[in-house]
Image 1: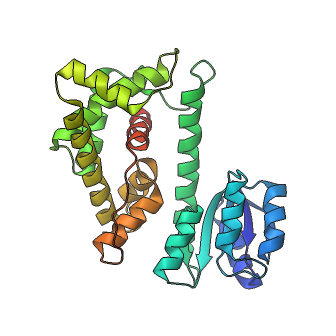
Image 2: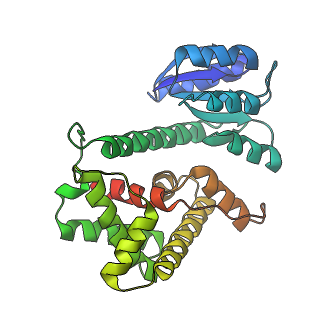
Amino acid sequence: MRFVIIEDDVSVRKIVSNIIEKYNLGAVVAECGDGLNAEEIINEYAPDVALVDLLLPGQDGVELIKKLKEKGVEASFIMISESTSQPMITKAYHAGIDFYIHKPINVLEIVSVIRKVEESRRLRQVMSLISQTTARYVSPTPRVGELDENTKKNRINRIFSELGIIGEAGAKNIHQLAQLIDVRLTGGSDKAYQLHELYQELSVSIGQDVKTIEQRVRRAIAKAMQNVANMGIEDYHNDKFETYSGALFDFKEIRQEMNYIQGKGSYRGKINIKKFIEGLLFLVAE
């Protein structure tokens, strides 16, 4: 991956750059010490990842990221700051950052976060390719449609078990929805779909009310989010937490859920049903 570091402290820029180089995470293509020049640099170099300080001369990191996001910049943003203000951190996530790292710099945290960002970007790219076309889609791993039904079922059940929702009524409905979405993503015809259409189709197929199916699915995914958030609270570097927090959920919502569980926030994290199910298909294919 290509990195740009936006930080007014030269020593911090040097530390982050050395970490990226030492752990073979990618290449630092540009550095900058203020928020105004950073806007031009990121537009010019189009990095995959920008590590941005919160407090910058010219304009702060939140304002910088907000402007870049509004312009359609597709870089992933990691914010680095000494600030522990929860409202400020929440504001940064709303602006569009992927992760928030506290100073002083922790090598293991930097490496872990960058690898999560890489995985998240790879997931988005693969799902985008699947959605756009199956004819031109080439994957280093088998697509879900190429696996036999028993293998797919076993892999989904293993994931549900690790998420702690294997016994939830909605887990079966999620599996059924995943099968319907799989057909659309790999069928070679019109692959666009709306969730309400899938709920209707599933309702007719299994003879259950649409609202009941949707409520079961939402409850099961919400419980999965809660369980994943608890994994992160217990061990932020837990392999399952790193995988599921990025593949099945928006990480800022996982952080919101973690804050709620710890009594640091008033609102729970929000689930995205489509992201959860498409992420589930991606993990099954891997």
